[in-house]
Length: 163
Image (cartoon, rainbow, N blue to C red; front, side, top):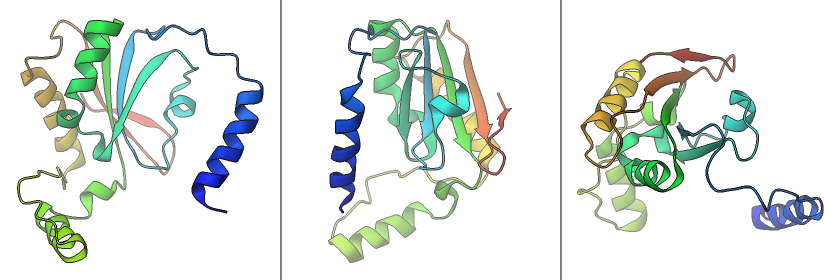
């Protein structure tokens, strides 16, 4: 069975008892959470969130520069008033360089990605500090709301505050 077939089958079961269609788009806790797309992380379960509680934005590494558009919409149109940025231990973004991924794209797809910053990092705590700094430097997000930087430990499931 393909991944799509599995997903469609699971969705049919999910939709049978679906009751959340009337939830408002504004998150109850007025928080936007940015996290890595890593499959080992289940933000709602790890953070004690229910549907409708938060906006959860995910990308490779949980990098802010790729999420600014979503954060601006979350704040300006949907009322979020707090931002939590979550990186995690044993992140795949620590295993390559921009040059590595660009070379792979050239070899496998004959694609030139020299203009793309893939945002890998070696120092996890520095990366989370850099992302909080990137947030604060952006003109399109609110600067009157709290912004936190956390590291999720995939080994234990615990969060550690960095910023």
